[in-house]
Image 1: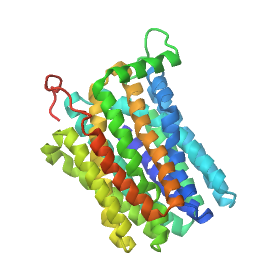
Image 2 (image 1 turned 30 degrees about the vertical axis):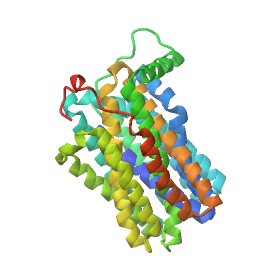
Image 3 (image 1 turned 180 degrees about the vertical axis):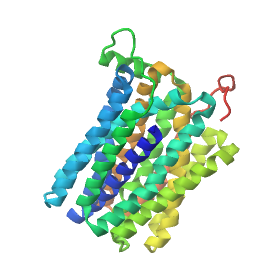
Length: 392
């Protein structure tokens, strides 16, 4: 039931992202505004992530997760009403994307904390891959459904459908037979809980390495995603073609998720990250030189596959080194590193595209990723052999 709730919730996430980004291209041609849609959705996860993780460790996790899903449903309903009344402006759309990101900020850490409680340690990698598969299945289905509804009824209908799916996810969460989370016996203040989480992250060499490599990778990799609406529009894509391009990215991730269990070489986590940086840089360069939307699709599929492999490797490493009592806070800090890279990178590359050109911004992001790889290659996320008791 939780996996179905995760599937429904992520369906709304991708449908919102597709529809909001495409609606922004209709409201303005500025690449800065379009890139800010990506930043607005991820910035709250960076700003509020630690507080969310602390609350998830201190409060009833089921209720907390259901409340977060209800928040997302309310924001989707507001977007549907304003879009239907043709009352959306770039600032209003951006504000509502920001509020949607607040709901995601409260949803991600608590769900991440629940997963290790439901499976044995030896099954954790498979469970995380299954969750990643859900994200990327919806990354394919979400844009397709959004594209069909966009072409048929417009953006207001997509946002209304998001509200319905969010309510469905909330009901599944509320009815799922999850063992009650036992809050700490001692009364812990929120700020103290947050300090404890940060203190553990700073004291763990592997977690510090995961946080650095996650921030660096996603800060440059987000350039292709954040600027994709502008890139697609420049190739003459309509709403249907744009959603097909996003579906291609999701399809690459789904194929990677299916192949992961059959690739034992990926146990070398540092090597996975290094190869991922090179492949994503290649995908970005190929996207710049693509002469049409259809030749752009394979580059996006490669990008999606790399994104899945890197994210799954980093997430599994973080989950394995976190103690149960600090897991939600630790995963919140991990999500903050990803979303901080997302938000900062989206703003940076959007500004570079405005000052120079779209092609220059993407090419520079690819070059910077390789330079940053040289800087971070000595940052090790591998566990010492004595601590690696489960097969990876």
